[in-house]
Length: 164
Image 1 (spheres, helix red, strand yellow):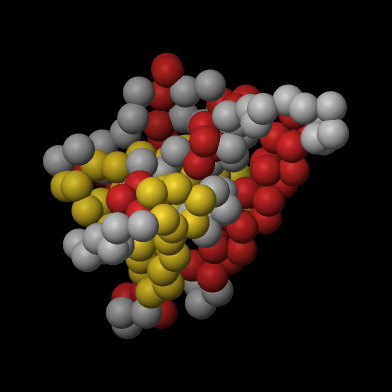
Image 2 (cartoon, helix red, strand yellow):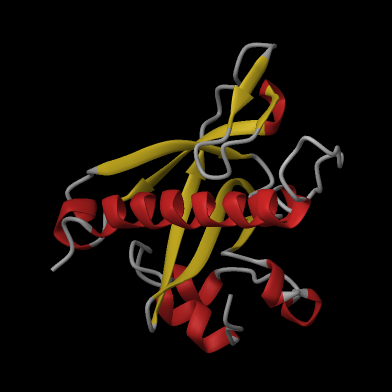
């Protein structure tokens, strides 16, 4: 991921309420290893149901304000719709995002299951065990990265669909 500045992140929000971008708490950008991210995702420590993800769509930064569901998944396992990683249900949350533009202001939203900590970029880089009969670890991670990027752009596209 190409690095982003605080002003770029704040200006990128496509579905924020008036004033939300200015009030949005940012993670420690000096700690981000940008080369190992497909998007920057974080939760608001002051509003636990609020989250954000920001990514590049070509040369445009796209930021999406998210709201986590208050309802937790039943015990068991679940799969994140972005990184496609199976995990315990408590580590996956339904997030909704208001659509951009007039559709969002009219109350339309989209939702998907995402890792509760919004750290898919870190999770997909956990190397699988290496065996002679398995694909090379770097190939597995590259495939995970490509899949995450595809699904992220698809979700972002659904948020942007009604913009204009």
